[in-house]
Length: 453
Image (cartoon, rainbow, N blue to C red; front, side, top):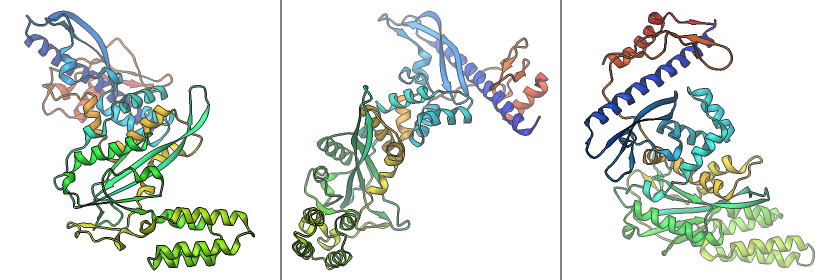
């Protein structure tokens, strides 16, 4: 037997042991709750079976069921450890792993990854179901915690990502996932790192996104103390409506350069437009484009139409200039620097990578759910979200050593025809405060005389 086989067999044995240990701990806790309950208020109606899907396998066990004074059914154990029927009794660790995997790869690949790297099997449909049910409960404003200090200057950016859709009749279409980012500036020590960044997004109307942005800002800051809000956008009409109050708006520099290259093929004219921009003369920019249109009018209809589109795009007055060239703001706090802006494209890469590339198509609901959870993950709030909707096994006093495999049974391990013959062995980790994993394994090997075939 090679080491790779040994490693897999030992991993499966430990997973089986973990399931039995968890089952014993839950049984001990359930019994204590049963013995200490108010017997007049909670009548014992026997035990009922359930299963928790953990990282090391399915833990199947029975717990006491009660009828309270109102005639309602109650599981004290479920209440004590916060079991959540809404996500199929997946443990918090498994639920978090599923969401993280589904946010990086397809549901099928996520199922394969989890099945290979944990002691449990999960299907593509299982991953999809957990992901969708968790996403349906996301409320960004409930996850946000107020910052200690409110900045005098706040940055906002917005942009959209178009993704392919498909309805129930398999009719193809597309939808725009609208994204917005709130941040306080850039880290002075890490030039590419944003200070206190929060992403908000989904398949929503512009007004709904604006309401979300305002709600999140009010949760984060004392908005009355914010003196200046600087908004960077690509010129789309809905972005202008993201900020509810007065703000300093600027046209995104990346998009300015992009459209100059797209709509003006004459390199000399492109150079003159850029020089006018560097000279901070928006009026001169429009003059150069207008003179170019007049010079080619009647000669190249497409070039004229393209130049007029660029003229219309850049006809935003001082908004085509950097905010730094137009207003004065207070000095940034220590450790923070202020720059031009233009970070939304890079923030959108997570949406594009997971939802846009390849031949992916999304339902409206599924696409919205994916966008919301990607934002939660990017904001570092997934763990907090999972705690709100799922269960965690509490620390409880360990019971006496238990017998966790029957001497008469062969336990199948992994796939194929390999079996591990595990005879009745105690679990030192449960019976002793000093019990360790190595002692547990020695107990399994020396105490049971197991064999592998």
